[in-house]
Every structure is written in structure tokens, then in C-alpha cells.
Length: 214
Image (tube, rainbow, N blue to C red; front, top):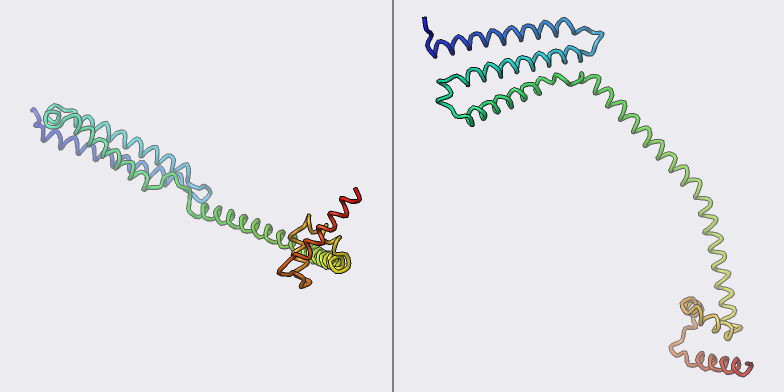
């Protein structure tokens, strides 16, 4: 008796579903046998993944066999068959990834992440304590340096002020090379005049004396 195309497809689908059901039962039995408290279950997951891939290959082979039959070939083009196969492959990959077969147990992963976070926090805390110790050790030296700098600055300004009051000619010679400091000393001693004609005349007099001595 010759089977019709419709009956043949029904038979193929029934055989295909039985095959998939058997593979699922084998996978469940294998995982059940391999899993126990002494292991992480990674080997069982790898075997389940291999079984899953085998099932996908079987599905793909059956699908290609059905799609390449003459009646279907006349109805669908090659591009349509390729498009349908691509969509089926994407769906199978999505289903495989959703099963998380290659993922380690969440408890172990969470413990590792917590240990790493604690190590980083301890390292950061130790670095902060070390920086604070170094800064605390530098404070006395900075205070002493500031005191000595203040004493030296006051002494230098007093010396310049004395020369400014008692030896204006010597001060003017120094002021030529240090105009900014000279203006500062004049301002501090309230001798910054609106007109510096007197100082200019004295400077000319000093230059004449120097040229005469040469």
C-alpha cells in the first residue's frame, strides 16, 4: 500500500517526537546518576550539554530530510529553507544558553566573589593606613621647616630694612637686581613715595662716583 504525503509526514513526526522523548529520558537519567553531594555537577552538565547537542544534530538531520523531499522542494525555495533553518538554529542556541549548562553553581561563584571583594577592601584599607602614617610623620618636619623659614624671612627683611634706612646706596645697588623685593621692602617700611626723583638723583651720584674711581 502506497502512503500519501500527508500520512508520511505524520509518521515522521511521530517517530521524531519519540526519538526526542527517548533522548530527554536518557539525559535526565544520566544527570540523576552523576549528581551527588561530593561533586560540583560540572561533569554531569557537560554530558547533558553533549546529549543536547546530539539531539540538536538529530533534529537538524530530520529537518533537512523533510525539507528536501520533492513535494516540499517545489513549494519552498532554497533561500526560504535556509532562512527557516537559521531561525531554528537561533532558537536552539537560545534554549541551550537559557539552560545554563556550563555555569558553575551560584553558591561557589558568590563565595569566590566575596573573597575577592574582601581582599581588595583589605588592600585598600592597608594602603590608606600607610598613607596616613606617612602624612603624620611628615607633619613635625613641615612645622619645623615653616618655623625656620619664617625666622629666616623675618631676619632677611630686617636686614634689608636696616640697609634701606642706614645704607640707602647699598640698598639701591641690591634693588637693581631685585626690583620686586625692593618694592616689597619699601612698602613694608612705608617709604614707597609717589616720586622717586630723589632716589634717581642718588643713583646718578653713585654711578658718577663709580666712573670716577675707574
